[in-house]
Amino acid sequence: GKYQENKKMNKLFLAIIILILGNILAWYQLNAQFKWTESAFWNNPYLMSIFGIPVGYAFFIATKLCYEYFGFTWNMRMIGFGVGTLVFGIMSWIMLEEIPTLKTFICILLAIAIILIQVTNLVE
Image 1: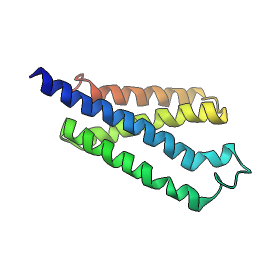
Image 2: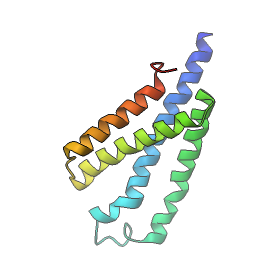
Image 3: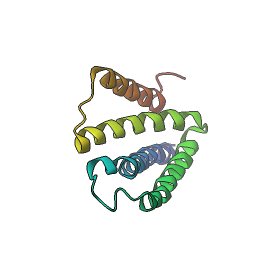
């Protein structure tokens, strides 16, 4: 009943939260080198490779939760793409002060549309 629906919805919500956190870590892993160009930490490929462990784990868990919610892998792929695009855009704007162009802004809107299509019952 209602309890099962809430439990199932919590899986989707948790999957999206974990995706956001994983994408934030991935942004730092790959792009912090451009913010802190002189940093021995952020420019060390061996240390940055260590970030792959929590990033990979986050994506693994998010994929598992999303699959348990939808029963398909395609939904997670689309949501992951959309969340990744949004997080990348926001992080690049905040951390590197890269102002999105009109073309980039339209792509961000499309990413939002992809997420909304996947998490709502607009299309069955």
